[in-house]
Structure formats: structure tokens, C-alpha cells
Length: 189
Picture 1 (cartoon, rainbow, N blue to C red):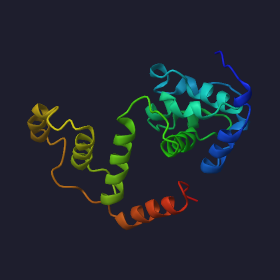
Picture 2: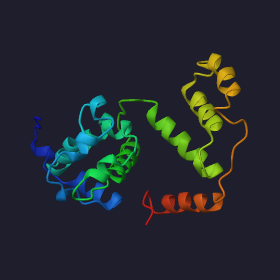
Picture 3: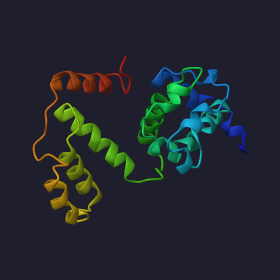
Picture 4: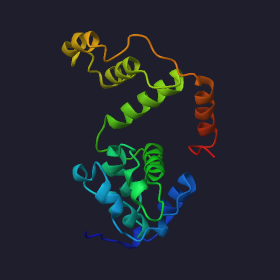
């Protein structure tokens, strides 16, 4: 791993922003790389989690907000389970995604934020995910209305997707959580 640090990159502002937003202190990471070894997407991204952390520790700036890892992370928490220091990388990734959106960073995979927002919106409305609404919102957002429609009859026949949503029992609680997150600018606590 080769990391070039220039004078403009020696500030710790991005690291501090991540700490404020996620409550995670990345300074405790000693680069054992267990997070990267267990990462389900590390073979499909340019930089694995351990490298992202190291670059943050060394003072890398907003260029990290264009990392494909922050948008490809599936939040499986394998990295968190394997980390001997208990670093919650999912919270770090959430903070990086929020900062990337806020700073209008160039996102490598253009449709990932659209899918992310559509997913969160369905959870907020229905108290759980509703696949048909998620697919519809995504198709509208990508303007790919007719793509994959040939598969719809098979999916419906096998009852893989419900026509009507199954409402979560605690929808009000879920909506309150979303409101609280918005009020606290991305933080739940």
C-alpha cells in the first residue's frame, strides 16, 4: 500500500468529522487488518477497510469521500465482529456516506445512493422494507422503467414479492427514530 501525503492533507478535519458523527475513535486502530480479511466486498473495491482507516489516520481529506468502499459496503458488520478494538466500521461508513452526500462528492457508483435513499424511505414509511415500493422508486429514479419487466411474471408467480406491504408493528417507533436522526443531523444519540 502506497499512500502519498501532501501538505494539504496533514489536517485531521475529516477524521474529526467522522469521530463527531459516528462516535468512533479511529485512532485506536493498530492495523491488524482483520476487518479487511473478513470484509465481504474487499475483493471488489479499490481500498479495503483497513486502508481507508489508515488513510484517515494519516490525515487524508475529502478525496476519501469518493471511495467506492463507502458505497459498496453492505453493512454486514463482519469487520466489527472481527475487530479486536471494537471499531464499528458500519457507523464510520454511514458517516462517510453522509459527508459525501453533504459535500456533493463524486460517487463512483451513481445509483447506489439512489438505492440507499429509496430503501430508507420505504423503511420509514412502512416500518420495514417493502420490495415493490423499493423497486418502483429505484426504477423511477434511474429512468429504467421497462428494464427487467420480463422477469416480473415469474417473480409474482413464485410469490417472491408481495403486492401489498406487510406493515411493521412499530411503524411509529421507526418514524420517531428517523425524525430523531434528522434532528440530530445524522446521529441517533
